Length: 289
Image 1 (cartoon, one colour):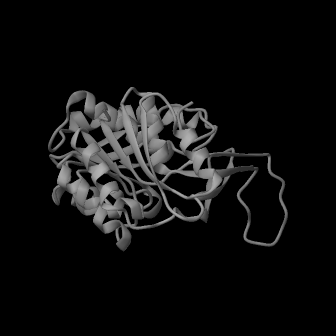
Image 2 (cartoon, helix red, strand yellow):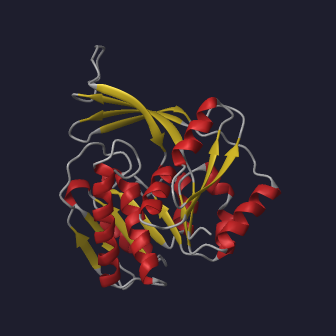
Image 3 (cartoon, rainbow, N blue to C red):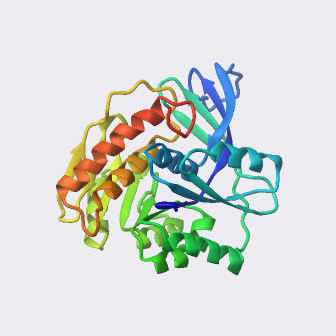
């Protein structure tokens, strides 16, 4: 029985390691290394939650190509259950250009396939939600289709907004349903006013990761909480944000966190997130080392 249901992207990515990200001019570079690996923000959260002992269900849309089997196979791990919804077309693929300094340029080669879910598929997900303790709803067309089922479950909903700038329309339904919000600071210069506004609007807690500077969050009582980044040897930054959220979720579930978070509760979960992020940074994929 899954404790957490994660809904959203799982992909197969081409990872290319470079000395530096390409300049904006015609030229040729040589890769230091390259490989294919599981990707997708929901895949990363699933594997990190499972590694912490949290039984996790990943609901993802895959294509009808050969790589769909590779994605499903790479998700196979202890404590993981999968609902792979198949649609015509290629599975999601990214080209990720990486440097030794942790810089990344991610290029969509194929977006996840999109189709309307059947009543039977919705019912299957709904049944899984009824026995879970929390939902991680990732940005995706699949997530949009299942918002009504997630809302009806009345479970705590965790949403990862990634590099949200506070304005993008696609994110609005996810922001509206979120009980716990996570994001990074790539799209917003000063995240604290935004985090505070979301808590004032009803979120139980809101957190922004700051890379090597750690993370900042706003608790349910309005307190601003900061944690430092844990020391890490960076092999690959893919999945670090997903690992941070997984660490937070596992910590919150262990405490039985419910309703607006205190500053102490938020600090404990953010610290657990920072510790788990180190496992992602030491890994060559989205899962833990």
